[in-house]
Image 1 (cartoon, rainbow, N blue to C red):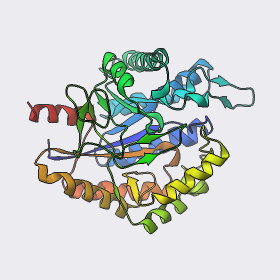
Image 2: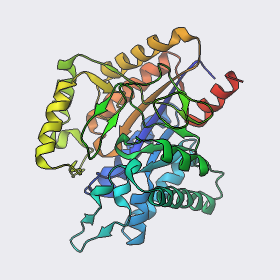
Image 3: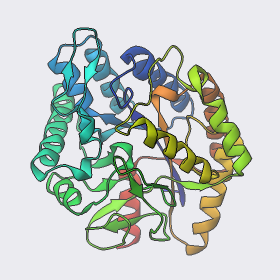
Image 4: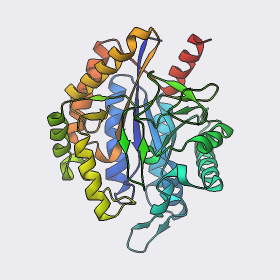
Length: 347
């Protein structure tokens, strides 16, 4: 494997409050992303919000069969379907006016009881195993991403992940902090490595444990970031014909405070294929490589995107970014391939 690998990940879901239609916010944009990836013979990793699809299947919602079909096609094409969990879908109810009643108090998986965490993970892994077994596909659920990046405190969650055979996490966005008590995360202190293992604290390197392949992060100018945020407002920042909203567990007053906090932290961004310009994606990638290339170890870039906000503008920028990556000898990969390569290198 080349020294530099790029794992493109997409959170495959509707909005966190249950709004958004499956066709326009999930299936349609995922097709566009897959088409672009296939042009470069690049594998796509879908972090599928399985509790969401279990709820939809329970209530016999239309298009669940199309979700399953797309997940199978992704795996068959050389891609990877792994586990994403938004726990507010636990025991969700579908209402008569085609809305979902979710338990927003369960927004953070790390805050849930051991029994709820275990149920969510076991039920989700079983659902994925059954899906791929039905199609005679050799499949392993081994990677996880926490909904809303809310993996902390991580000790109990890590234990349950390990018990259920998961060996990779990709929830950490180094340098990012969000202090809302209802949906917080704090990645301000982290190992200065492109990947590490952890047992108790996701931001502390410790062996043996789960591999953490963090989302690539870096800095752009505050004005550039602000312009990106303004471009992504409203329908222009969503996938074509996707309608929904980002309502979360916080009060209106807290949401105002959160917006002010985000403005204060302008300039620190994830390698987001849905919102960034091609120049910003290249800039972040180059920063990450420059930071770690001198350590003479394999480097993994991890990009993140979301189906619901993969817009027409996203398509153009993402295609250009993959073209740049390909021209610069970056190997498109999956977490499993990167993990095996790193484990081999480290003996």
